[in-house]
Length: 138
Image 1 (tube, rainbow, N blue to C red):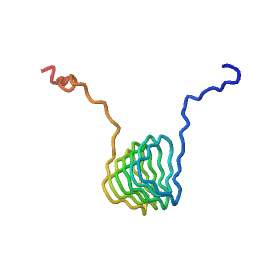
Image 2: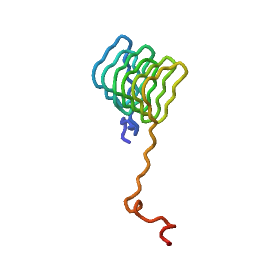
Image 3: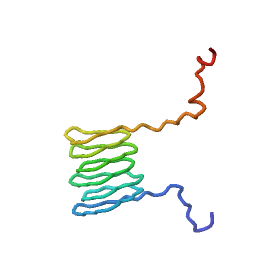
Image 4: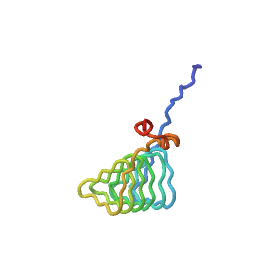
């Protein structure tokens, strides 16, 4: 290493974004870090991120994130790659798809939910058509 040069970290530093109370945004929000929303949002939220919708927040959106924690109100379609938590102050109206779903007592959920499985490797075409071992000996 040369004198005065810094060693670069192999990991990227993920940003943390914050939407404060009294703020309103209408549009598309693309994020790769962590986000906390305490204001109002309408539109679309996407990214490899952990999203927190704080108590008192109102979100009307299509949401596709890694993890989602809801303490406020969300209306829309939600897809969480990993975990969705609806806390006791939270309300969700819409469609949910998540790897894990946690709904606390007194939380409100109106809609449909589906648990997503980790994708399994499909069988190769020749394995699907190959006879089973017991069938091959006949």
